[in-house]
Image (cartoon, rainbow, N blue to C red; front, side, top):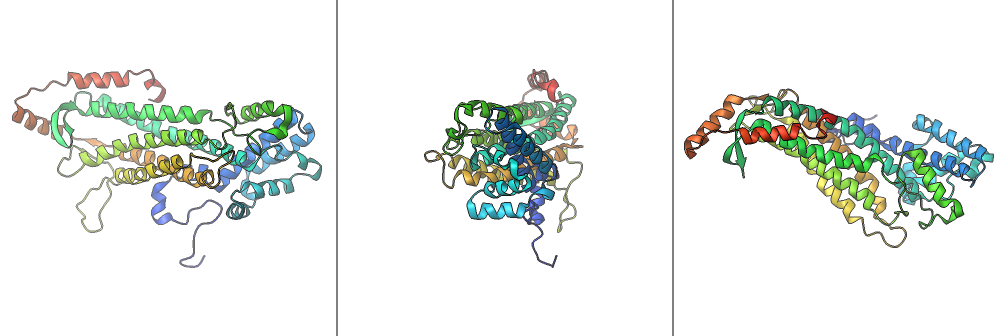
Length: 404
């Protein structure tokens, strides 16, 4: 590669690594790159062929051949598919599926090609692939956030009675405890992740055919949808949802909420670790090119930077909801790259928050000094029982044992 030449391509690698590397993780990268989407589309085509054979739309032998070819190609996508051609197809035909079907048919023996892409349309493939990609990536993010639960729970338990000043509008309010702060954050993130996980745990399959009626499947259409959904571990929608983008947008909104709740933790770390407050210190601070004395909360800052981009992506998906008639022109086609960015940013936000909490050093003496100064000004007395009760309720919640 020549100096200055792009270092990325249609295989899903990024050409913006200088700053973009902080906005994703290797796991999220692998679960959302071109190969991952191609793998998800192949999974749909394989399930569709197998289901079509089972319900009698094509002969079972041909269906099995197609399903096996899809499975084999899915194990090593780059060895079996030309991903650059898929990307070129997207640029010229507004979908990668036309070229995907062409390539798939070339991999299948001639006498079984009639069992490829039975009764489906391009949007069925992309929409269902999106559900599979989101399910897998949110599953990986769940594991990341589970570690944050453990970190917050440990901090809440360990600092249940550690008095600190409660700040409202960044002004001293009343005394609370650091454990209560951690407990509140834990509950918020737990509830946000539970919602996102519920939505992506078994999202709806998309299989409506040309105009959403699946007419090409005849009387077997409902059986076909149900079997494809079963094979992919997806739910069965009441109708096709080609022009109604609720399933995608609802997941996106839940991810936006999760990112927002995670960012609250990062913001707390940044503020509490600031020089003038100094009630916590990060274990591995970042440096400064101009001021060697600085101890920057760099990973928390990166969490804020990642999450800062999330609301705009969610808004873009909301803006795509008015799909005209049976199939929208231009709006749903914008979803896939937006979803990739969204999934990567939410996962990166979680990774940065986890890193910022790893080995976090709490300074109870510094916290107590601020509390004593507050009480001296207000004439109050210290009673942390209410804050301790917040910790007890949070850690005693019905879902706590699932994540700790």
